[in-house]
Image 1 (cartoon, rainbow, N blue to C red):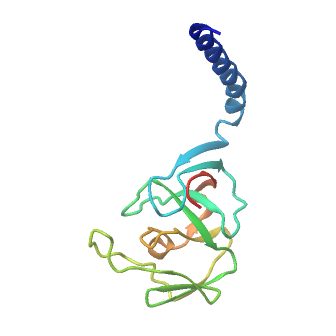
Image 2: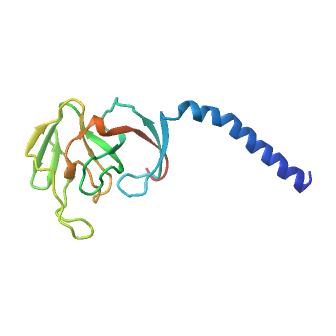
Length: 165
């Protein structure tokens, strides 16, 4: 097969793939999205986001916005759920425990040397539609600093498609 013929066959195959995939994408628009993680707070780079999915359980990855936040106002964040309804959160110094298990240690200063405000609760039971979320990286900005995450701020659940696990 000549180079020109092979080129046109490849173009035709690409057009057929787009024609087959595009209608499915239009049906799912608004329900599914792709998110590219640009930080080290959660391992992985590319995630499928199931928008509006509110059946959240421990270890789910969630995409959310922290409205009115000092550092990340109206920016989407990706974190892991470690605390759900009924779990007991205890802060002892800079350490955060959920049901007597150490889940995170807060830092006093950011990487840039800025003093960090911590979620200052000594003990609280997580209520319905609230979550304690953390990142995989020690420098993650998460519930250690902004507190419990209300379900109203969750945009969807994330599923890792590509990147380090």
